[in-house]
Amino acid sequence: MNLPIKIGIILISISLFSSIFFGIDKYTSSLIRIGLSNFDTNTCKVCQEDGIYYNSGCKRCVQDSIVIITHVNEKRSPILAWSNDNTIGYGDEICSGHKFFEKITINDNSTYWIEIIKDNLELKSNFYTDENYLQIIDNVKLTMCSNPSDLQYVRVSNEDGKPAGNGGKLFGYIDNMEINNSNNIIFLNSFDTCKNESCDNLWTLENQNKIFVDTVKQNLAFFSEVTGTTDYATLNLEDSLPNSWTLRFKLHIDELESHPRGKGILGMDPSLRQIIFGFPALFSPFVSYLLIRKTNSKFLASLIILSGVMILSNLLFNFESLISNFENMNYFSSILSIAAMTLSTILIILGLTKLKKHAIRRKIR
Image 1 (cartoon, rainbow, N blue to C red):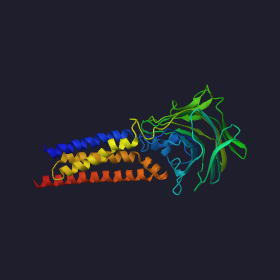
Image 2: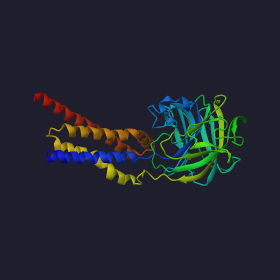
Image 3: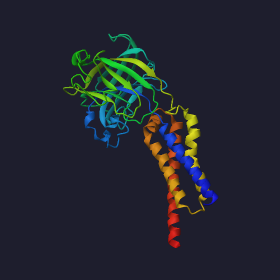
Image 4: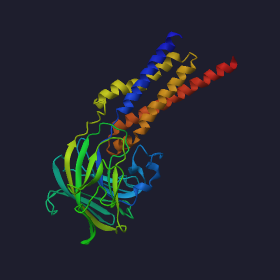
């Protein structure tokens, strides 16, 4: 084995090693979604164990929804979100489907009384400091581009399905849920009469360790962490909601551990992670290719293809982060991701070309 091939193998090994650690050190933020959907999560085949969205959770099931999302990212600002024939919070083909609250920051040891009001296509939400819904903290309004319909399921879900990682923590409970229409109560659940974790099967629970009815404290408790499990609770209303309604509930946050700002499970700063893992993973194979471009090595060409596939897989697996960066106007990160996808694709093409040349040479011999 000549020196260029040895150096090439070392460089590809560095790339593969870096790709693995860069991939497992990605992150997802802990959060809780509270609202309504037209979809019974139990019937979602694409998010079951053999489904294509198993690693993304049942939020990826196409559905109509209106939810409040609280999370532990840097600003910790809640979001009012909706969807129509789309995944939760992604609006429709025309609109992005969400709007951030600008004044409020979610904190631990805090209690909020939340109101979501739908009037045909008009949607708004208010955060209050009191149970009488009088002292308002913050509010948002938006006009939906289309109308979510057949909303019949009360839904509470964590950031379900994502591989385990350091995404912070959000622990707390929900209580005094009420849905009304023109002061006529459609649904009321204060959990006072519940005798078990599902409230006598009133709630369908996917993971009773993460979202369940606490019969002692008489509330719906949640423990949101990025643990790789699918965590949700749904309740089937007797009928679909009308076009106009109001949802009210109490949200209490016991413990909030802030998102580590992209540090991931290795506790590494994102910029440092890119330097230590990202750049070697991406550029080592190109240096290796330049070293062996005149050398006939099927093994090294295969390693270059494998390296490109691993890098591209990591990027595609975190495709939601790319979409989120675009929606939040973080264009620099988006451009870097697209550039990395392009370069990894070029790597695969170079490796395949090298293999093809190797096969041709063998035929000539």
